[in-house]
Amino acid sequence: MQSVAQAWLVYSMTKSALLLGAVGFASQIPVFLVAPFGGITADRVNRQRLVIATQTCSMILAGILAWLTLSGRVHVWHIFLLAGLLGVVNAFDIPGRQAFLIDMVGKEDLMNAIALNSSMFNGARVVGPAVAGILVARFGEGWCFAANSFSYIAVLIGLLLMKVGSVPRISNRSPMEDIVEGFRWVNRTKIIRSLLFLIGLVSLVGMPYTVLMPVFADKILHGGARGLGILMGATGVGALFGALTLAAKTGIKGLGRWVTITCATLGISLFLFSFSTSFWLSAALLLPCGYSMMLQMACSNTLIQTIVPDHLRGRVMSLYSMMFMGMAPFGAFFGGALANRVGAPMTVRVGGIACVLGAIWFGRALPELRIEARRLIVAQGLAGGEPVQELDAQPVEE
Figure 1: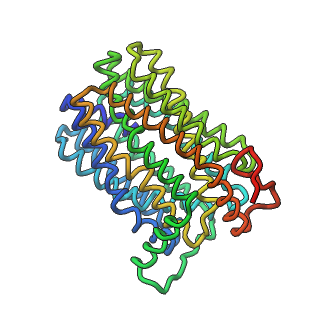
Figure 2 (figure 1 turned 180 degrees about the horizontal axis):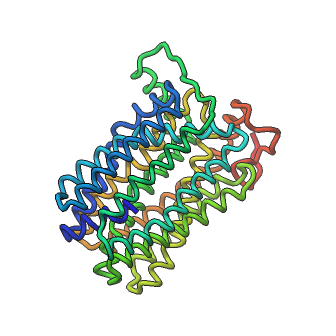
């Protein structure tokens, strides 16, 4: 709700696609810059307490934005500042929360836990935008921010009630040495490096369509705030089905091919969406967009968490955060700037083509990556006697 209301507030105040992209940049660039420190924190402290701290900060920031908006004191620079501060919080929250998953459920149920986590997140993306569209149209953006702030009370109660053995890890090295160790491990592990590169590409050229959605809703599809809620809700419906698809899967066999196919599907869906001038056709095309993006990110997350050693988990997930959310601000900023010059449809069209090219590259490299991934999984003691062709349907000869 807050994401949709914030985008509409900025757009209604400025009517600028460039500023829409700039706010997205301000909210996510801290993840790119600060996430390595969030990762080393997740590897050194109690992850449950870390997540409680980050969620408390998020609640306070949402409350401040609600107060400024409801009191009529809000200015664009307030939104930029609070978005930037929330980005710093997320730089610690995302790696901490992702690493906390394995503390809660163990390695055996990790894939289904990631899928369940994604299902809840995307279930909220289905309901939230639709409710936000109605609330913004009838009462204004401030009540969306207030609802978001109050919702953290339930989150914090849930976290405090958990009884999880999340113990801090002791390191005799400096934080910078530990951060460098995480970068080096990823750099010499080709499967992880390739997955992170593809995630970064999609975040850079694929995700800007969400930032530009107010432009599509208002100028191209003429749906207003309510239409924006429906369009974002359609993306969430697709993403929810993507998460449920992964939740129904047992074992990691075939996930590498899923990553390839979903990246290509995302690119094709974005390309077709960019040509649509019909509101309901556009909403329908956003279903496969949400489905494929969700499934690609969740499959990549599962593969990375399955392969990475536990003592590096927070640091590697911080790099996942940098690629997933940290590259998004560059995409949002350049997407907004490009849309300002050539229009939102052409910007989304170019992004779709780039996603298809990325899928082709990853698919061609997959046979070699599959062999390395299998070896790493065996080294981690996670293979569990499954056939050697875990990451793809084709047999592998080692």
